[in-house]
Length: 373
Image 1 (cartoon, rainbow, N blue to C red):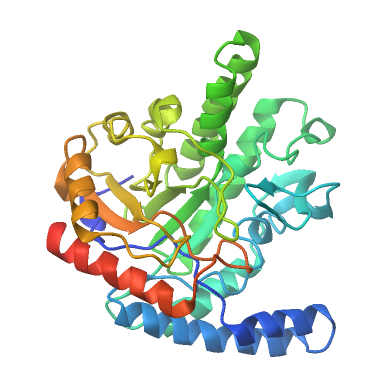
Image 2 (image 1 turned 30 degrees about the vertical axis):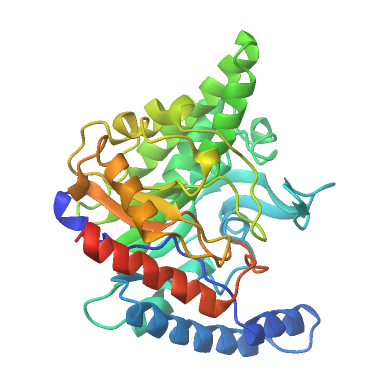
């Protein structure tokens, strides 16, 4: 499914960007019934066009729409996938020091691709404004966000006779979705995923409880099964990456712990590239990279060594030293550099300014050009 020739972005970015003030205001006006959906879309597309220009000027060879058409990095997609609906849950996600809104998603029927999903039109607009020589990059949440996560699959038995049948439909829905993006011209799609960080936390916490631990191992195995089944048989020139995220809301986080508990599962996933968070001590050391990379010379490891949660610029020598440390476990030619996460996983955004965001990317490019080109 993968070819080494696709992996040429030693300077890359996870996907989301800080929303400009007028976009936030337009979304509020739309929510209050003060402007139409068409008026909101016009503001979104105007700002996306500006953002694409800024990304190209920053030297990125793959650009996104900044997720400017979304409120959440994940729920806007999942809630409009066939067989799911939005609902208001009793409580919200509890980040360290912050709480999110209480929107969530649950299953309400047989799972299938929604070929009228608004993300397809969003991609077509992005593709139409990207200049020659630059690739439009599409981001969506991983199917693992459905499997035993936040009650999204609790009601599966209302619609399926077996758990395996549910997993197979979920995988097929994603496969068909990815294929449709390809048919519309997508050649680079990233599946964002907080599940592995969640499982790091749970596998560590359940280490002394064999029965509970086995449940989380089963979830990890199911995630590998669904993801690989979804990716199987897609065109060879479709580049597929994943971003392993520990949570990103107003510069806070959800999970912590090194990659060792899940490395063997990540090493089985048939992605072309892995965006891995390594911006602080919560991320652990680089040793699990050997298992994640798994000797696959067609796989790129994108090191998230610089934080998107703070405007502070990292010390260049420190970043270079960490790249060289990572190169002990993965060939340097297979490494790339990025922030550890996007700048605005939800529309609220992290605690830094838009100029701060571009200064951070400029630093990443300068280091990547010097060390990884």
